[in-house]
Length: 281
Image (cartoon, rainbow, N blue to C red):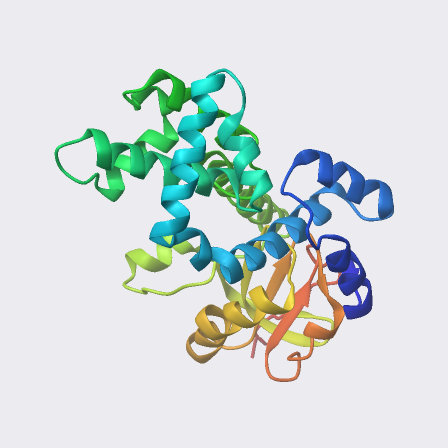
């Protein structure tokens, strides 16, 4: 789905002060029925992550952490089965999984002899049964499964979706009988920063020569696209020439402004590929 900047801004405006819950996503779908669920979820997640980055620091002051921890203790003291941590996260407008991390770290600091390592924290968030307190384990679990933007469950889902679309793109290339090298093959050749696929014989798409294709299982908004341009796409262009980026969940139309410089954006696999053949003498 390709949206104009104005259409994207209208959707983004509806997300202001909306908690990152599936209920909020359902309301968003009702408000914009013509947009796909996947596109709205991608926009929803990206806009919420921007909000979290803007407000992250205030939740990590020593005063805020201690206040959250005492509120957690008081809450579970009254009713350990109630979703105390989840409700606290929603009340202070912070991602449930990130709130769970704060409280878990604070709990372990109080009950363990040595400060918890990042790997230990991550392991406990992935598997709350490792947490040495049953009530806290349940509270953390509630936060993880109810967070649709952050946390290990979301990370696993995003990774699986990204891999699924890479496989889909591979199958489409094979169906078109296009020869290519994938990311693993390129790294085996010594390349450190590579697109998902390098075409061994370039193709033309809408009159533009394409040497490589990158798959993005997300919506291309201004923030993410400019970051990708800086960190990935221009590097690919410098090394391999012009290429194609597929944002499977759509992008902002105005961002497709670098075609003449060698980076083409599409929201699906192109149907008008022209294979370039070497002339035979």
